[in-house]
Structure formats: structure tokens, C-alpha cells
Length: 443
Image 1 (tube, rainbow, N blue to C red):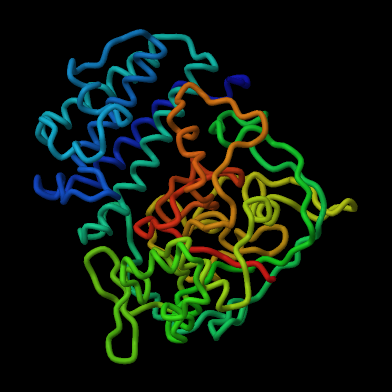
Image 2 (cartoon, rainbow, N blue to C red):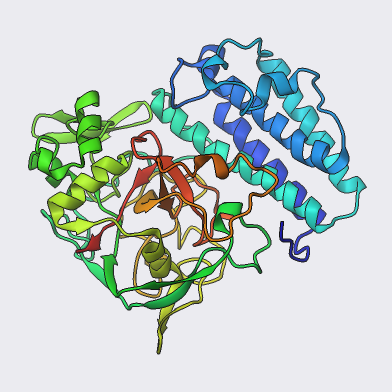
């Protein structure tokens, strides 16, 4: 496992660890005991189990792996090991109640912070403290889409702007008429796809940057909007089998899907469920909660295609050079850290209009390639050349199965500290509970 020199401090690591925990608690504090368990679904966990799992994971890596210390609960492995405890059994476990679970979380957090302060800061320590922080950050996003799935209220402590933006149409930079898209022209050439060895932390599936060669292509300046997707729906897009892949048509038939999962028709207009509220569909916002199958059908209807992950990363990371492409940017706008002027992240705002945040544009003028909604690509989740699993082997390796597709860019509730242009997310093609949309390429 490659390590770079320590580029952080104990204070920074502890602050991020505590910040991740504070957000976890904010996302569940208003839920009653029944909501913390929720119904038995294949796409969710009992939130009571999931928050306990975070404490277990933290203890496993920064106390067990680094310090050889056992967990604070003797039954922790039996209850919370996500690869040993089958998903369907998590509702049947003898889980400790809310108060005991919160106490366990507090105990493991304080033990982790005490251990951090008591030992020298070396590359392994920095790596594993970042790992457990980022793991908790990712679960925070899962808590948010679980609240959407289960029709719970929006988490008031971390989200605003759920109501319609009152902008009936996007600006001319992102028109919302049938099959209408504005494209950025990306030159062909070779560039380095994947994570740089100089990064202080990358996940194993990003390792390492390696040369790929692209033909010139044109990619959407913005994410596909609700308005554009509504045109597809209104043009009988869900009833036309020729627009769908065979697997996608079978998925559509099985689920009787005739529009995105959280939409409904009211008279001649559309409404969208945002957590526990039905709101008028804001046509300017990026479309969200669509499967890979739905994105692909839209592309066939509009005469476009999904970008490959290499095309997506080139559009986000590269600038034009005499050779065609050169990778110069950690984020679409450059190497500065994300902020609200450039990217819709960290859960403070719900999905915004796809043409907002021009200060976050890539070198080629592509907007919101960081934040707002995750973007499906045409690429399967596969290892890069020379892949070697990191100590947390379950993070990537089990999912190189041909069933998971790559998503890029992050969404409105992704933590900013997680993201860089090389970050690879992955879900199965049928997932529509997650905060996923897409942008298109010209054919």
C-alpha cells in the first residue's frame, strides 16, 4: 500500500473525525425508534444498525488495526461486521437501543481520539484515520437517501432549498426543449486516467493513473435537467421498447415504471417528491433518482450517449495542449478546495438548477462536474491495470462483477473533502434511490 509523507496534523484528523460524527448524529437525531429501524428493504439498512456499524468500523481500523485494541463491545463483530452479517438479518439482530448505541458510538469516538493524541503521527495513522472519516461521510450520504426512500422529512440541520427555485426555464446555456443540448468540444489525445501517487489518500480502485487515448468528443455543458427528461417522458419514452436495452426494458416492465420514481402527474403538470413533500417539478434543476437504464433510454431518444468514465475525467480534469490533452486540475475549476461558489456539496442545499455555479466550470466550460447529482457513465466498474486491494479489501474488489456501473462527480450531499476528479462511485444499473443523474455526449 503506497504511502506519501504525512501532510496533515493530529488536530485536523480529529476535527474531521468529530465533524463526520456530528453530521451522522444530526441526520438521525429527529427520528423516532420506529423510524430508526424502518421497513425491511433490499436497498436500505436499519439506521439503528448502520450508526452502530460506523462505531464498529472506526474501532476496527484505528484501534484494532493500528493499536491492537479490542472493540468496546464484546458483541460488536457479531452485530456490526457488514460482510459477516447478512443484510436481510440486520432487522432481526439483538441490537442495543438508541441510548446504548449512541453511548457505544461516543465511547469508540473518544477512544479513537485518545489513541490519535497518544501516538506519533505517521503515514499509516493518517491513512486509517482518513479512511474511517471518509467511510462515515459516505454513510452520511446513505442516511440522506434512506430518508428520501422512506418518506422521512428532509434533515433540517443539513439541507435547505428543497422548495422550487421558481425558475420555470433554464438559461439559454442549458435549453429545455426536446432533444436540445449544448456541448463542449474536447480534443482527442492521451492523458492519465486515475489517481495520482502524490495524493495523500486515494481509494484502491483509483490506483493508479495510467495512460489512455481518447478520440475527440463532445460532452454536455450541463447535467440533463428535469425539463429535458420530462420531454422524454411526455414523448412516450417509457412505452417505446426500441429506446431501451433488453435488460432495461425488463426492469421497466417488472417495476411498471412510466416515469422517474419520485414523480407524479397532476393535471398537465409534474410534481416531484422531495423527502416527505410533493413539490412542483422544477424544470431547471438537474434530473435525479434515475437508473442507468433510464439514462440510457433517454440517450437513445435524444440521439446522444453516455460518456465513458475516461471521457468524463478528461472533460473535468484536462486542459488543451499542443498534444491535445494535459491533466492539470484536481477539481474541475482547478486545485483549490471546493466551496459553495463552485460546487453544490455538503448537504447545505438540495439539487439546484443545472446552469448555476459558473465559477466551478472546467477548462472546457463544463458546469457542475463536482456536486449537485452523481453522473452515470457508460463504463462498468472494473479495476485499473495492476490493481492491488488496500487493507479494507471489501471496499472495491467484491464489486468488480460486471453488474456495477461507474458514476462520477459527487452530489449535493457528498462531503467536499471526499472528492477529486478521479473519485469513482459505483452502483448497479437498477438503483434509483441514490442521488444520481447524468450528462450526455454527442453521437
